[in-house]
Length: 163
Image (cartoon, rainbow, N blue to C red; front, top):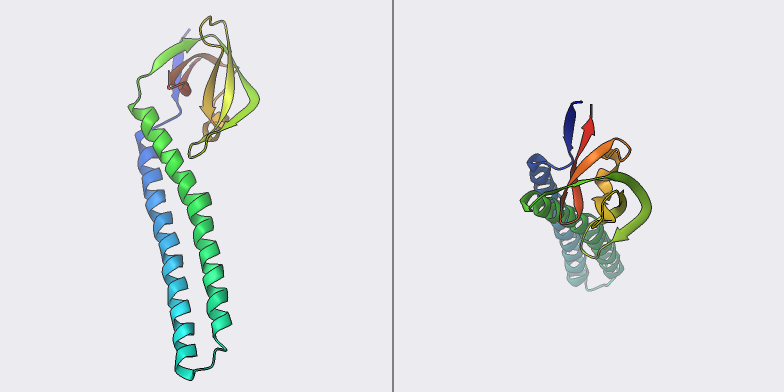
């Protein structure tokens, strides 16, 4: 029987994540620059007229812009950075082959400043009882058809199926 290997990670993916990170960094800093500009205009207007009618607008713009900036940095840029670092580590790591039967579990792990992962049970192996798969890759992994997997740092990076 012939087998084929299905790779879950690629160098192109690492480059795409780096570009995506640069774009979202630029977007977040653009939001910050616009926020500062709007606040400066409102403050200058309030200073010129010596009435502080525009000051609440400056405060509201500052709060709204800061909220958008922090949301982008915390929930978008940091996730992309974690994914990029993960892919880089996987591509540079030493791979080993694990054979056996594999089952995706419902158990998920979250690492602070890291990626979310799902545990994969391994049977037929004495020294390994479970591995991990990056959550964004688990839809690509067909546990029922996998004969063996390539593993880097406990993460499944590729799997072999019988064709």
